[in-house]
Length: 265
Image: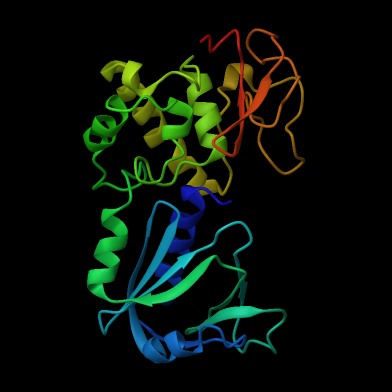
């Protein structure tokens, strides 16, 4: 599933391409036809992301909410766009730019109160200037759930996924199984500051760069088109810092990677 930097990158792209102009919105697939009709031909005022949620705000006050889920993706093209290929949930066409959305978990029109209800239930987003890390820590310090699970809870921290979760915990030597209640304020401050520094790089480049320069060598990444990671998807490989084999488990239904030596329980 795309992490928060991907949605913020899309929001920036759509803001540059569509904001201030009239957008033709349709649903070639038909599943979003009623929603598309509500905003078709309106001016897009702004686009933004909250965690893993993308919002297109139109001049009527309505917003299109998109959650990509596991399979959703936007496919861009210059107008005039050809016959839709595949199951296109939403097509957006502006002045010189068009995009097709396929496979999202959610694509719906929300009223302002519904947008507020959505954002209110999300946690602090390290990529947003209005984020409140103290509110997130208040949730964490009251919980006995593992910090590795809390970092993935979108009601606590919005936008962090499996890669950033595994890597930021490694970078600070914190076991993913540490109960939230045992995390100190200093440790939380360092984790949050690191996310605030790392995630904008993902927005700018489209890639999650998490390995410090002094460790960015040796065994290649888990995929040819991805930067190296410390532990993510490196089960059994030697830790880039201490050479201990990287461990794997499933925590609350999600794959978890960590170094038992650098992140002791």
